[in-house]
Length: 265
Image 1 (cartoon, rainbow, N blue to C red):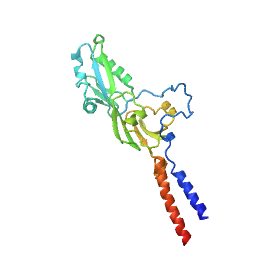
Image 2 (image 1 turned 90 degrees about the horizontal axis):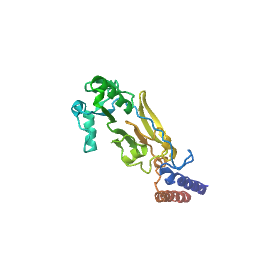
Image 3 (image 1 turned 60 degrees about the vertical axis):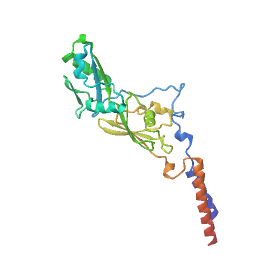
């Protein structure tokens, strides 16, 4: 009876301490969940609509540079990315709690919920109506002052990051944070996204190539990415086969010693 109990304990230990496999760590695997034609997938990405506290960089150009100086008080070409971020924080156009930005000459302009292209069109239309003539050949450029997001959990470098790109997918964002650690759960990554009515939690499986079709594959400003630990980490399992063998050997040593001690009683 005791021998059966001992063998059961050993078998249970082996099952619990199975090492992390390639299926747990390889990104974008073909799991047969979507039809793949030469690995070309249709991405699901919608234009971002700005939110409260977003910072916009707005640049106005015309034939006469003297007329546009009041709208461009700071040069947009900055050497270091961190300096650029700091400069835009103080000199960019922050969307207030009412969804407005305060623009020279024009005053308050409501942009909440607009896309970048829609804001460009709106600012240009207001400038032409109130300040410039059609012959000025006005050109307006609007950009987000960096894509800011947060990464935490089972990653090599938790923190708040800013990337100066128009589009960033979640794998790029995680790579920028040092990537998910070996004990991180890539099959159920959480994306906490802000909406007008509050925050919502979304799930994405990064080991499945179908993730590229997810509306959460491309991150948005102010996203929070949470990576949970694998269950085997909570059980204290090793990450590799050698670690598991060492752990199992230790357990076997304890069990064998306990068996012989109880047998001699």
